[in-house]
Image (cartoon, rainbow, N blue to C red; front, side, top):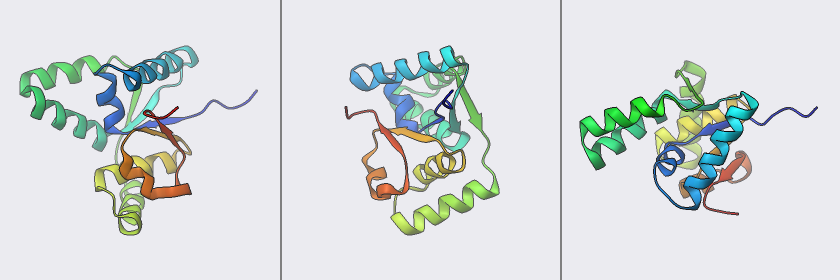
Amino acid sequence: MAALTNYVLDANALLHFLGSGPCASRMKHLFAEAVHNQKPLLMSVANWGEVFYHLWQRNGEESARNTMTSLRRLPIELINVDLPQVTQAAEIKARHKIPYVDCMAAALADIQRAVLVTSDHDFEKLGRHARILWLDRN
């Protein structure tokens, strides 16, 4: 039996889930697959914090806190940041010049041998150095 794919969520993947459209639909499918396979999607706590920040900026503190509480019910395993992840993120930042918090997601995906889930085109700078599931592409 083939091993199931691990996925790491970028912040924008979770933000898409909260919206509508094709990206939200793809995220719902990934969450359903995670439940079915009993294999949660992974996310760095740094990227989780980025989601909270964006929600606070858009909708205010109370709404952001309520939404984050609701998101905790999803099959997401939050991964604490550790020295190997921040070191690898810094290396990615130095080589590819993408935002550091994005580098945290890319580093976690690499460490976990996972596919990064995103529609953030900053990740195009990684080229073939990362496996990416693009939410906004077929």
